[in-house]
Image 1 (tube, rainbow, N blue to C red):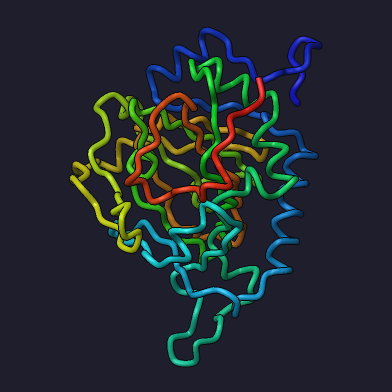
Image 2 (spheres, rainbow, N blue to C red):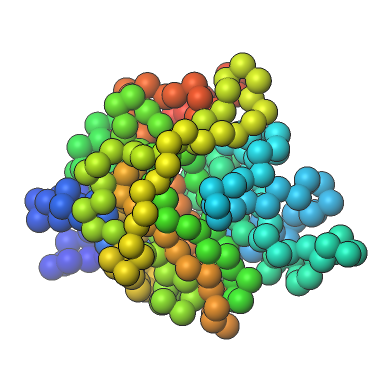
Length: 294
């Protein structure tokens, strides 16, 4: 962890940082993850991909383009597993074969890495992550969703502008995301873009699933038109952690470069808030959400 003035950084934010987050709806924390943590997460993701057999899963291609997602059982159950999702153009439609190597074809792994994988669990549940979230007023930070995001050279797809609370709704709304750059991020390789101050108007759109059938994803409400020229590019170095308010509007463009832009993301809610039964992500009864240790 980073050292400031000879004191190890423990994740606790300054009053100025808390104020900045309240104003902008996001906060950039350079060097939050140590080089060892970054390397550990990258190499662990490689191991998971190496061990994964694409033939074992349906082709659940995960996309936020046009706000359409594959609404299959594999996706809807992935909050309980380490599940693998392919890039949209990963397969040759004529042959059904992958167009590129397996490692270049996967878009993400999700969505219970923070509980099921020791490497990602250790970071997600670290004391410094808890201190950051508590600094922002979350008294019972509870990780609910995690994903390793592969942004591979020239195939890494866009993630259109959205609010995380669209997908992870609590009463009251408490969703807060952390996004860790595991490689240097630039405009060319598809860095995050965030809209300052966009978190104050509530959530405009919700993704819901009927809790009785759990088969079909539907959307309620519409996003307004956001002017992409007003967004700020977050060009950050590996190890940087971006904290995102659940109602902050953000997106990332495709990776058109020759360099990958991998990241790890975890979404937290306050454990005392009500988890919406219509959220797509529902844990099995024997695998409840667990708050961070105090």
